[in-house]
Image (cartoon, rainbow, N blue to C red):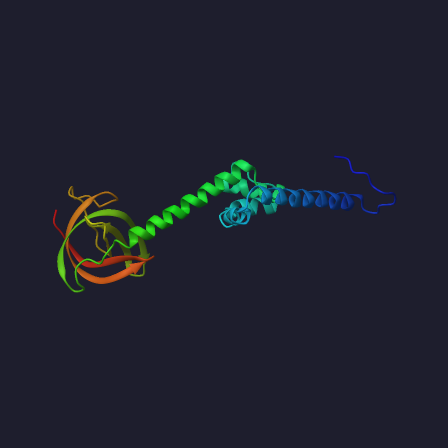
Length: 207
C-alpha cells in the first residue's frame, strides 16, 4: 500500500516502517477485541496456544516475521495471533474442543489411577503374569539400563528397571503388547504421577 507522507521527512524508510507497525498494532488490537467478544474463554484459548507453540515456529517468526509454511495446527493458530490478535471462529472452536478433550482425558486418568493398587509386599518373591505397556532404556556410567512398564490382569502397574532384559514367549526381547511371566522380588511400593507402582527386582522368566 502507498503511504502519504508529510513534507520534509528525513528518513522515509523509518517513517514508513513506523506507519506499518502502527497499522499492524491496530489490526492486532481490533482482532483481539473481536475474538474476546466471540469467545468468553478467549484468554484460556490463547494461553493454550501460546504455551504449546513449537520453538521452531517462534524462531522462524523472530527471523522472518512470518510463520512456517508447513506448520502444525497450533503453530498456525499462534501465527494468526501474532498477525491478527485472535483466531478465526473455526480455529477457536477447534482449540476449545482440544482443551475439553484434554481435560476429559486427565479426569479419566485420575479416576483410573484411584483403582490401581500395590501388588504383594515389599521383600516378597512371587509370580507375576504381566502385559508390557512401555519399554525404554537409558545409558549410565555402568552401562545400559532397561525399563519395562507393565500391568497385571487387574491393571496394576509393575515396573522393572535394570541391566537385565525381559523376553516374550518366543524368546524375543519383550515389546509393547507382549505378555510375559516372571518370578521377581517386590523391591518397592512407589508412586508416579499419582499412580501406584510396584517396582520389582531380580526377575526370573518362565518362558
